Length: 540
Image (cartoon, rainbow, N blue to C red):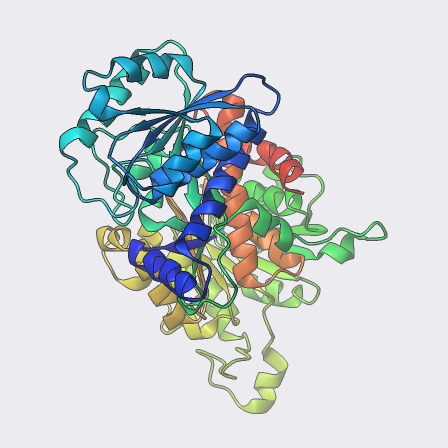
């Protein structure tokens, strides 16, 4: 789904209306979609009931349309009018004709009817305020929302709360939220995800987030101009490599994972297993012999490329070994658990110095005659660089020009600071803008990790993972992500698609692992690997 500002959404709807798909038609699509989601959710139950808090705007209209459909499908619905709608409102007349019970604040100033209705309904629709609010809330609206919030907290078995487009009182650009906001169990957003919904504190009020269509026509310029999207399960499923029955391991590519050091040996195993779990046909682990003896039993399916090392850190001479064994590799991961040893930095310098950058024809650091260059130079496969690999990379002059086209860089904010020279706080203040700016400047895909991970491509496309969870705030989690992206690249996905799909799957594994463990505090990076089969089962 598109990821939009309030201004962008207004422009899209305005253009749609001018093109003949009018505001009432958009509301009809939205209301029916809203009703269908709830009807499907409660399909196994009889005598379903819903109460709606209805405002004067589009969210209230969406709720009234939804209730007309729910009445038709056997529900009993009640609309509590929080802000007066016009006396000639056709939606209100339609709802009354459909059998929707109508209550209003003007005849229930002490909320006695509202109190009774809250206790008698299975579902509560929050359709009071939409995207055009200004904080703080005041007057009757603030009073009603505050009252309902307190009542729900006091109930032993409160109704399921469904926010229509957004929880009332959320600023859909900034993500700020009024104290009176009613936390939702489900937020049904219309046509696009509004920017503020994937910011805190608003995100913590959403519950599950799903989208519905409002029937927008094809070819709207205002919609096409939006290059930012939120990753969905449907999109990831479409990107996932096919697995034909007559496949062999070569069908699914070879991932070479060059990672680890004596201090950070687990990074190698986590990244390697992740590459296998996401479907790579063969995973080769490039590491020192000391790590082989420690980890060979952890992942018996892997083959090994033993690399020269100095005191457990990858040595400069390892570049020659990698270069000699790169021919059949379809994706290369560098960096997890490298440490910051000088010898490993020299390894990267040598590896990239001899690499042919097909885009520029440059041989980087090494200035040698053409005949010798032809003997020594080689082409790197699709590349993913993570963790300490990024910090070491940042020490190389003009490093972005040394990498193969559309490498995938997976920094957390601190590593992004090392690559850019910016302060971490500045990066966190504008994660979208910073990721997009440097993806374009460097010519590589940037995966800026953290809450609502941002994936930015050099061509201006951007995708956002709609997840923020402390389950992923654990050492080794990034190694798993790097392995997932590498495994997808090995199978032939393009850099941006592999990065976005891998980041989404990684986030879902975090959520599933937390559910399996019972809380986020006990989730380890290895638990993400254990959750991957369940994520893929739901996805494919």
